[in-house]
Length: 277
Ligand SMILES: C[S@@+](CC[C@H](N)C(=O)[O-])C[C@H]1O[C@@H](n2cnc3c(N)ncnc32)[C@H](O)[C@@H]1O
Image (tube, rainbow, N blue to C red; front, top):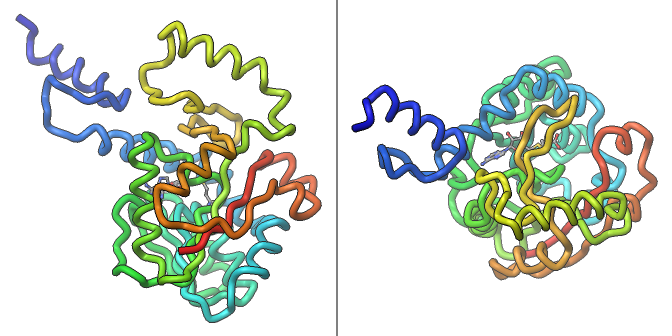
């Protein structure tokens, strides 16, 4: 017979690893991944890094895409806005009808503080992309920048987020996001790492926290330990096709605009997508 203290410990361990818990059956698997995402992004060092990113502002490639696909009067939702890098950047470019939303309270506090310092009345809210607190057909444009949509654990959760974005966009509305492209030549240097990952999956030795090939817990000096799904172009196309979106444009960041040193050093290569409802 297992004592209740040790049962609790076993539960806690399963929840920490986002596994479904048949022991207590109290909470859904998803709520643990959301809790862990919040925890990851509320870490002090992560908040400091994202504050620095917000001070830097929009990427050159993002500015190009925004100028082409966004109108100044558009109602914009910036999901996973972090410390406000893109929200404040867009506001400063003249896109003033904008809301920044993030699940991590710490990120929203940092974003509000930065907007206050710059005397900008930007609206920031704590919210969950899986249950957007907005009516259907509310926004002209939605953004989920810097691979944020791929930082959401579980395929069904990422697809739920995409369906929420589709729901809140007006007909003809546009969604812009980025993801990795693991088949692009910029990823060649990681070929050996991914071959080893594949071998681990085939042997069934993969970390039980992970669900599908491409899932990793990335650890970097300045961004802490975070979940991310590393995708390919064909995978992203299938993902987009789970909703009735039309792909208007997709290109690697370095091919859209010359990548400044700061961006190259801090953000790594990724692919931008512009899709339309
Ligand atoms: C990689 S960071 C990008 C931050 C910001 N867009 C930028 O470019 O600096 C991903 C952000 O998504 C947020 N996030 C993750 N899951 C979320 C969810 N379910 N709902 C809302 N925000 C979420 C995280 O808290 C984090 O701030």
